[in-house]
Image 1 (cartoon, rainbow, N blue to C red):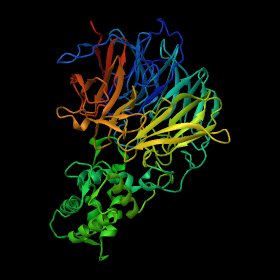
Image 2 (image 1 turned 60 degrees about the vertical axis):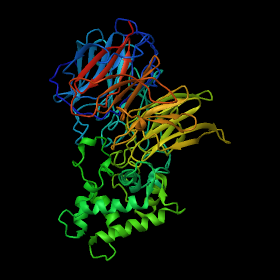
Image 3 (image 1 turned 30 degrees about the horizontal axis):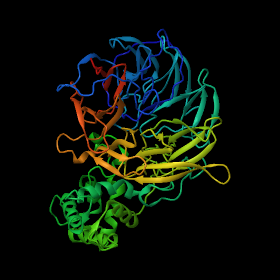
Image 4 (image 1 turned 30 degrees about the vertical axis):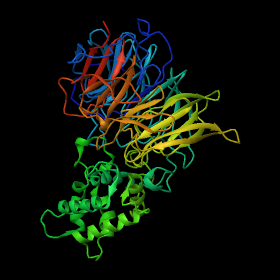
Length: 612
């Protein structure tokens, strides 16, 4: 297929794209540079640059803009930089494309058409592919929204081979499409079809030939698991936990003092506030149909069908399926209508049940457990398993990408699927171990796992959190993942996490927003929380590291330079990006060869951050 050019279009794109692993080789003309960023999350797949000599503090107006590239097409993934060129993906007109720019000035080098643009079912995040290309010497590897994996020549964009995760391996397209970036490791390309007999696959990187496929046993983070729903939706896979999706939003609404403790009066006041919204006509009664119609407005973002885009609220109304779970217990007369007193009485009864130690306050953990106990747990109806929303009708693939680790002399691939964190043998794809709690009940798992100091850490939002596991050999010579800690204080939506000097930095929060947070990596204890920053707090965003500084991009578009510290938040500079679109800024920051790259839909900004 020959390279071609097409008209760009502006986009909104979910930034859950992850490209991993690189093998050293010579590129098209110039040798690879030591401070390139040839894949998602940089040269070592951990969002950390090896570069030095960068600015430790930015001027008041931010670092100078070196150049700006426009008309890239629809996309919100971060670019990759290797051997003098910048690579990315987009939709242009009716085409899905890969493009290459000059690193020196951002001028176009080539554009290659992969195929027709994919029509995603969900209304948000649909205008372009989300993969960051993985550059491996003279070739680069990408994945389109429909699951087509392509190998191209870096010299001119010519396609060498293509495989389909759906047609070739029986994978199902997730609700927000395939957003993984391929892992290149040695002679293999690794990716995630998410099928029952091909959860992960390895392809020959030169030919695309299938080398192995991973079968994940039932209950092990694979598609075959379909029964048993844990409290809070964080244990074994099964029916979707309503409490997992609704509890955080309910708790945040009721916690008027914002002290992370819920008093009886606060909870009862929430019932009053709900009824006022449910009964705008002031009739004093609300029918089941009215409750279902208005429940979404009474509980902002509650469960919101798993949408990662806060601006898309109202485009899909999950209240028709969630509202009956609230309405039925409150309708004491069983007459199909609900009074204010009935709703308040139900909330009072719930509080008494949940406040088991009669402390007159509830933690979020007790709140979630109580809500899980009193509410039915409806199935998703999309494949009979956990992750039915995010997994798109039972897909085992989520939106994270695979990392490679070495344990006890064995190389493994670790992936956060729609239903759990799994490890497989690099040699033959054999399933090795699983860890369930890092995956949320909706299967919308986006952030790349990390491996450091003997711990594997993964996290997700939507009421879940983050967990660290230590791998160990069992009595039979197999591998087991032993939980070291689990915390709801690191609900990483899609911004990723970084481990640095014993600290875990990332963004804690989902659709409802959030803040940067710092935890002790070995214990999960909170060291500081961005919510406590008195002025211009760092809201939810994505993160990278270079030369002693964190580069943090908030969803609203500001890019922050932060000095890492276990003691407090220390901001050392800020860019208020010009020409911001109205869309969430989901592209992660990239640092390469003295430059900072920020992509905002079809525009790429290049800032000079080299110390003079």
